[in-house]
Image 1: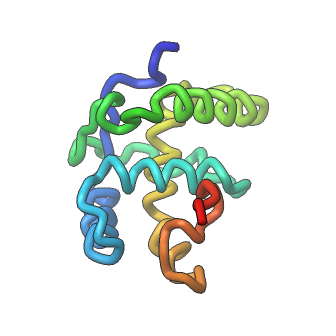
Image 2: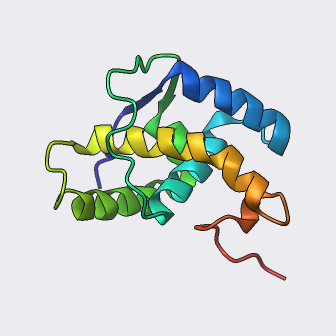
Length: 133
């Protein structure tokens, strides 16, 4: 399946939050944090499709291959599924824009979500796969 976007471009606000998240979580790669952010955004039901309109999104660039890694097919399917659902109310947003907005939204809410979890870790967030015992 063709990826929804070749290169993901994120804003300076997202870059600043990712730098903070790297310190808090100990995760050193932006693509891993962005995957968590995407899953968090897709697992929620709040309205976020209008975020970051007109925001310059050229401070971080990540290729789809780097971003998705071995999870490319799964992430692609998840994004396309949620995008199709969202299009019922917002048919003006194309798939690449939807993906970028989802990641930006997830990055914005990830610090707050981490503070609200009792365990203070990413695996306690909604959308996280169950952990093996």
